Amino acid sequence: MSALFEPLTMGALTLPNRVIMAPLTRMRASAGDVPSELSITYYAQRASAGLIITEASQVSPQGKGYMQTPGIYSPEQVAGWQRVTAAVHEAGGRIAMQLWHVGRISHSSLQVDNQPPVSASDLPAMTKTTVLGADGNPERVPCSTPRALALAEIPELLASYTHATHASREAGFDYVEVHAAHGYLLHQFQSIESNKRDDAYGGSLENRARLTLEVLDATIAAWDADRVGVRISPMGNFNALDDAEGEAMGLYLAEQFAQRGIAYLHLSEPDWAGGPQLNERFRIALRARFPGVIIGAGNYTKAKAEPLLAKSLIDAAAFGRPYIANPDLAERLRDDAPLNEQRPALFYGGGAEGYTDYPALSA
Image (cartoon, rainbow, N blue to C red; front, side, top):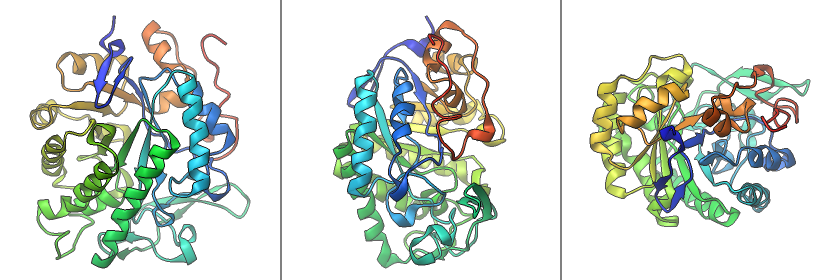
């Protein structure tokens, strides 16, 4: 049997297999950024994964960067997510909430009172985000120029993660995952490309890592370390953030995560967004610093995952886009069955088509 289908003890729980559903932004939330009725079916269909990690969900209104993404801060959102987690658990699955603040990857039209988004510094992201166009369809627009987050605002930011963690527990999630990757707010603080601060949160590597670790500590304090994971992308270039010191930051963060005894480190590798494959030298260095559970993500196939599992360089593999088209991906991988064809035009926005209508093998 493939190592992908061996059980895995990960923090507080034991997963029945090592096939993880990666977080996937789908832009189908209802009014008030509440998970839609369709999302209940969507996640329950995929419950055979060892763990489902939800689409990234903003911890506050300020954390929003795309149209129709769900939040995890209001009572209505908690109630919506309770229905999702109940359906996943009834289907025998496990599910983690991914906590998100986009920082500068936003547009003022998505912010409260059309305010500029915030970031480590006032440097714009040379990329685009997605808003709801006048015709009711997704529209790509340049990100708005951010303002630098003030020191006095950091306690409120940390409190938003504390609140979102409590909300996730109330909603019935099994874990929370801090999204510190992909050019979003915490990654913006980590990177020398986007962080030009001269205070305690800028300059040295340790200072640039400070906010990520403070957010992690706030999250752990609100639950337990064995219920918390973190996602990083130390050498990724998604959202126009190509960090020359990303490798050093990734290894430093791994050491810090290990000291805190978190449930897992979720490593987003650069090849998923058009970058090179991660080299084995970095994988070995990362493992030396983080002996806990490492989830690898980035264009994974069964053939890519198995040698890395055999070398203990990862402990589980996260699959993203294959899970969009294959709700029973774990079974298909186990049986070496063919995969459904993806429909990229339906990835973002819309209704059931391209969301809950992909057939399972047993259909």
